[in-house]
Image (cartoon, rainbow, N blue to C red; front, side, top):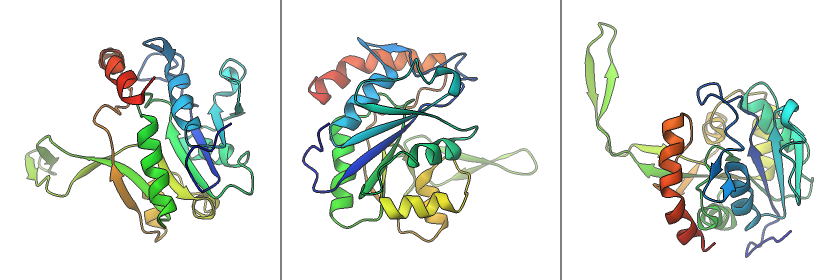
Length: 224
């Protein structure tokens, strides 16, 4: 496995243990272009990582095994799945990325940006894109209140961390859907890099239609 251009020993944990209830089935194996969602995520991760650990549903563990990766049984929550993956990351890893298999369109260039920020000295890095929709908050009386979108961003994965930082965060037993938020809650400074508009998360069948439409642009941007 290649460590890419990074001076750090980088490993990636890909979270693929979700049941896909809202989607209607396992999202990891849906086809986007000529690849599955999981294979696309693995390919981009390997561009910068010495190794990849996939946290998979226990019942799909063997089905999701791929050459050049370690596949482990995930947990009941996202945080538990990350912890399951962390146990298989070698102790000599210096940086660990956490990526959702449900974001198959993240390019190798995005993975590289996250790693470069870690190399520059950041302890935790999250890719973000500016919020473009108008934001509303539902008040207690059922009415809507406008919220300024100035300095508001949507977080994506892969999120990157110095290895000791991520291990310490998860040693606390925290349960969260966002590792960057967990690090922030523990007092870690979280930096950001530019995300990608096309790095969408597949949650519903409608999202899959959009992802498939974007697959051509992904291949061009990823150089594949």
